[in-house]
Image (cartoon, rainbow, N blue to C red; front, side, top):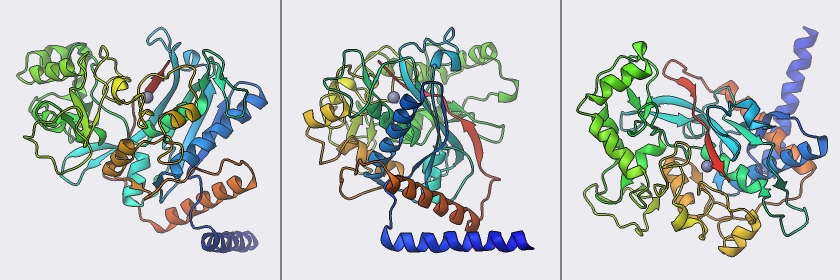
Length: 410
Ligand SMILES: [Zn+2]
């Protein structure tokens, strides 16, 4: 009884603290919370990495309004030891982000995979678990803001990398993949016989072919005409059956337009364009996707076109990091330091289309690190606890899986 009384008073105190804080400071400056942090380097370096992760959260919070905090499971580790380098060569990979994805029926009735981070904002529902698993390759040389300039050759500005990865974690993540077909693409697989065979990501819903405005979503529907029982899945069996189906040519077609052909597809930034319209690659309402390189799962489609955007304020989501340039250099060069920051105008629009609440204007975050940040983090935790206790969760229609990692190469 005594313990219960103590717990009651602790909760009451926290509620009072939150109410008082909300009236003084209604919005935390960082909604990204590190729930776990594995780091095998020395303490000084680990602290620097942690500070960068917090600062990246502040930059994104300066662009988006969140209702629930984004939980980050972070690691500063040797990627080759964490993931098998004999399967995929991670030596050139700087970092990877894996958003936790959940499948449910979208507003148009189609089942899609949503990142947990977005699901929580749209439905104001707390769901247990980390939103994003972020692994930074500790085997690279990093420059941290405040280190001497110019940044040495071959070094990477970690802040740039972490903001890029967080945007993947928030949903800038495609599902179309060549596995195990090699020269044909398919969206992600469903989780059970009650789901469609192919389930696309929410990101994929907005991809259109620039040539004719046709959506990739309509192709997912066509591919779902193919009948296959996933419970008996084997790579070879799937290849044999699918390659003989009438739907296989669609998967080959998508591979061809994603492979080594610039400007073939982009993200639609408005709903005003009719599906039959011819879209030009310079069209203002399109964010062109990376299709110029040889198809590479993790780089192709899930990034913006490097040639078009690398020297503009929408530089952030190109697939390859330009060595020698810090985030501050890029923002200054493209004139976005005080206008949109790292998240350029088209990316801002797309995050709004995805379902995030985009701030009207951008104010660069206060980069002083101290008690103020800790207090804001505490506030975010408290808000989550309160919301989780008052919201009634229905897990019966929610399926959780780990998404493939999306990576930034050097
Ligand atoms: Zn990336």
